[in-house]
Image 1 (cartoon, rainbow, N blue to C red):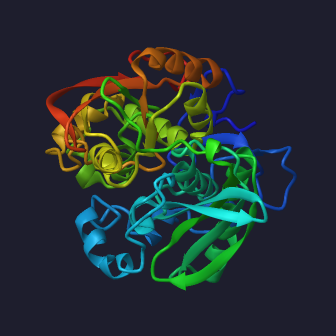
Image 2 (cartoon, rainbow, N blue to C red):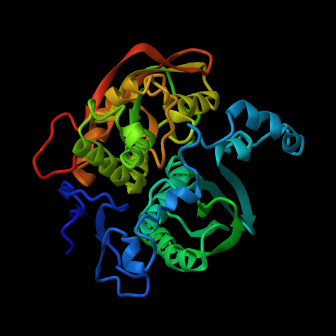
Image 3 (cartoon, helix red, strand yellow):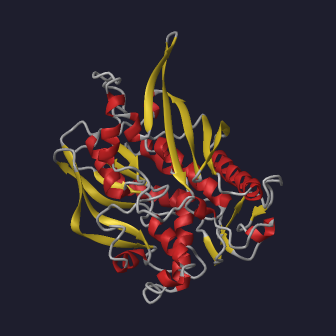
Length: 422
């Protein structure tokens, strides 16, 4: 086994921190050192020079990841631009269909399918995203986990198939393309296998920027879908992954830019910045499958995946879909350790405490009955050795969501443990 990276422990135990490198992946996972090798070997941090690439090769350079603080159109722009689509959606939707909004807006659709006397539901989700890390294998895993989060938010854990959609940066040389693209595919496929499915096909195109995404499909009965619109007053809001992924990625990339790093090195030591990045990568790769499965056991009243519009944007989307007159109030913000302080020093450009900091492959925001929430949190910890948190409540209101003026910041983890990542 390599001497650097994070060794991922077996399910049910705590990931252990081995050491940190500056070279992309930082993780040792089940996988391969080369896409053509046996899956019995261990994937090591991606080293461009080992593949005859320039030692300074950075995958994120081909996505221009950090030019802006968001990677999707504002929600109001999406609504405006899809007005033409709306006219073709029937005004009277099936009241039993849990996805009654524009499919462009919610990233998932539920369609009733009839075959003879059988009725079942076709559920599809789509997502695409730019490269956020420099290790192509890890980027593939993150992209797949991000895609599947849209189905997991509906409580669906049986994924039938996935199509991968990739835009390959035209500025990549043939050599670079031949090295990194197979690694991306392998990471994407390995995440699909972890989810219990596989990539059945897809589409590749040349584009000025590199992006990876796909379409995930599931067939299920109606009982397999958690309706996102059933929150009631008295429910609590649960979050299954900590916030701060985009900040951690930005911070890590600033380590390679002396001018920018000089602004922050007095606030956070370099080793802490790398550890925050490791934690973000570990979180982004983790599937929300267990969280989705337990939504059924503990009678969840709705959920959404936290993504590019941040915690508040995601909460507002979920609030708009409620059938009852309720509102969401968020009191607590679990944040990867040290990143809340970094956000303040960065003049709050990510608007973390306001809930607008983008998240990549974020957790599920779930509405749970108050009396079942503690058991849900306990079982998440038991099955995965990862925390989840009660962050707010469901109150009476007009389908809105807000974060209180001075939310409580929960450092994750609360205490550093020698040799352990979390």
